[in-house]
Image 1 (cartoon, helix red, strand yellow):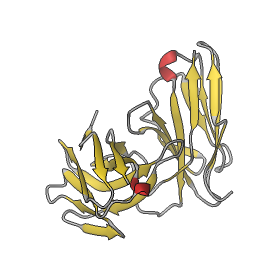
Image 2 (image 1 turned 90 degrees about the horizontal axis):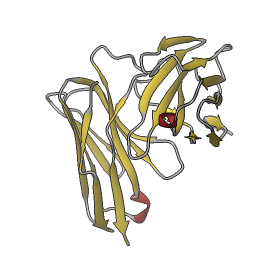
Image 3 (image 1 turned 90 degrees about the vertical axis):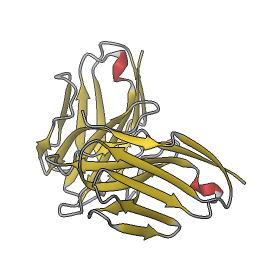
Image 4 (image 1 turned 120 degrees about the horizontal axis):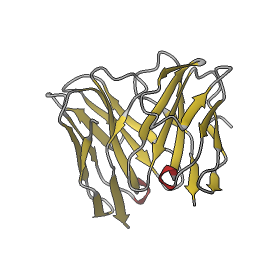
Length: 113
Length: 115
């Protein structure tokens, strides 16, 4: 099946540092989304992208939908301890139903105070 | 509560047993989704309901898995003859019809352990 390659797998950073993670696919995606999951919780939507080239911000978070429609990145500026969690990219592919999101394997973020 | 509610939060069963997992979506949400998340992996799509009908069940792994949503609200995921490989967190999500694609509200999940 289709897969999303998400990198890095994990990150250990100091509080205040900026973070960048990305996601690539071998096929075109119609939508790109970024979710965050904390232990014992379900994923929570951070940012949704619907157009190639779209750049969207949500507070300290910025994400972009790649021009080729095969990639996306998420940046977090000035990280804080509550940013800790697993960040997942997700998307819907051409021909996929609106409910059928394909998720990456996640980037685990650890922040040292 | 206002969010998606899933019960039980934890279920331990023996191989070969039958299991039911329940999802109560956000009030008024017409679309409901089931995903499965194995350890260290991202969620994997199972099935999606629009109202009472399954709009896409292409993610159900085999005929041991079945889901219903008889009144267009609460949904039950049913797993027959459980296997150890079924152990995972089963996540439910819901949205309003017309919501932008992919903007799902997830519950906390039901953790299934098959011994």
